[in-house]
Image (cartoon, rainbow, N blue to C red; front, side, top):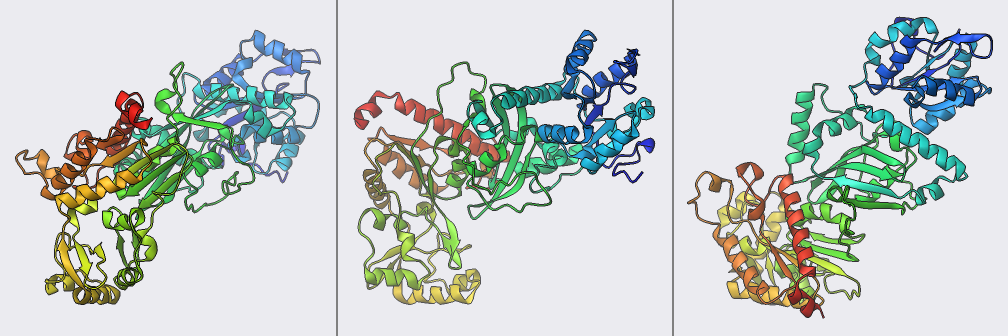
Length: 603
C-alpha cells in the first residue's frame, strides 16, 4: 500500500518500541461500543499492564465518546495505565502527531494498532516512520525482540509520563503559553555529582537517548564494560560530570539528564550531553548548557532542541544540591554575587561545583600561552596587580621571555560592592624558582616541563633537554644573558606577599586558601616517607598568615585523600576527592558566617 511503516507481520521494527497506541473498537476489544456492545479482552488488558512493567507505555487513539471510554476503563481498573488518551471523532493522523509532540517520541519508536487499514495508512502519511499493524499481530507482541523494554515493576516510567500528561493538561488550560506556564510551575533542578552511585542510569541516558543526545558518543553494549569505561573516565581530575534530576509542582521526573565535560589546560569541552525526552520543551537542556558556561560542543546528528539559541532566557529554574532535595525546609544555598578564583587545576576542579553558588565566577587559572605554561598560581604574577604595575622596562623584559603585560593583571582588586568569595592557590610558589632581570629588577618565575626546582641558567644540558622548540631555546638564551637566578621564595617573602594579597581583598570577605598536598601516593605504602619539603614550607607560610584573619579558611587536600587510589600524583587527585573538598569548603564557609570572630571582623 506504499505505507511508510515496518513489516509488522514479521515483528521487525526499526527501533525498540517505547509506546503502543491502541485503537479500541475491534482492536483492544471485540465489537464496537456504539453498535451493539463489546466483548472485553482480558488478554489485551493484561498486555497493557505487562508492557508498563517493561517501561513500554500505552496510549489510546480512538473514535468514541471520551467520557464513556474513561468510565468503562476506570471500571476495569485500566484507565491509569494509558497516557495521553486521544478520544474524539477527528482524523487519527494529526492526533497522533500532536500526541507524539507532547510526549516527545519519534514515530519509529511507536507502534499504532488499528483494525482499519485506511486509518493506518493515513497515520503513516502524517507521521513518517510510524510502525503500524492490524489486531492480528497483538498476540505476538509480547515476545517481539524490540518489545522487551527494561524491567520497571514499580511503574516508575508510567508515573513520570502521567506527570507529563497532567502538566500538559494544565498548560492547555492556562492558554498554551509554554514559557508563562513554566514560570509558574516551580521547576527545580537538582545536580547529583556522585555519578558513581547512579552509574547505570548515566549509562542508560548515554546509550538510549536519541532526540536529546547531543554528542551521541555511546558506551559499549556490555554493561560491565560500559561501567568500567565510564568509571575510568569519571575518575580523572580533568572530568566534570553530573546527573540532572528535575521536579516541579506536577511531580518528580527522576534523573533526566547527564553531562560530562573534559578539561584540557583548564578549558572545558563537552563529551556527553544527553537528556530524556520526558522533559522536552521544559528547557532543561538549555539551562544546563548555560550553567556549564556554554562550552564548545560538537552536536552530532539531529536533535530536537537548539541549546545555542539564547532567544529565551531560562530564568524560571531554581538549581539546588541533591542533598537538599528532600529536606522539608532546606535553607537556601549559599549565594554570592561573585566568586573569584586564581590558581591552578586544583581550583579549576572546584569551581565546577561552586557554579551553584554564584552566577558570576571569575577564573584566573594556569594556561598554555606563547609556547609555554603561564603559571598564574605563582604570586609573582599577582603582586604587580595589587601593588605597583610593571614599568616600561619591566614590561619589555617580561615580553622578551614570553610573557604578556596582561599576565600581570588581575580582577582581584576591582571595586565590588556585592558579596564575594575568594579562592587562592599559590602552589607554584613552592616549586618554581624566580629570576631577576639585571637592569629592570623584574622578578618572575620561569619554568619548562622537566626543569622544576632547577636553575636553568647554570645547567646547559638541562636547557637542551627541556627546550622543545626554537622559540623556547631563544627565550632560554635571553634568560641566561639578561636574568640572574634568585631561587625559590623564602619563608618571609611568601608570608609578606600573602599578607599583602589578603589586605587587598575587601575586609571580612571569605577567602579560601588551598594548602599544597604534602604526601604522595608512596606515603600509603610507607608512612615514614618524609613530607614534601617545598610544599610543607609553603603550608607553614599560609598557616602563619591565616592565624590572625578570621575570614580566611584553609583547605588541606590531605584531609580528603583516603588512599593511594584517590591520587593521580602528588598534585592531582581523582574527581571524588574534589567533590569532598567542595563539601568541606561549603561547610566551613557556612560555619564562618555563624562565627562571632568573623562577624566582628566583617562589621
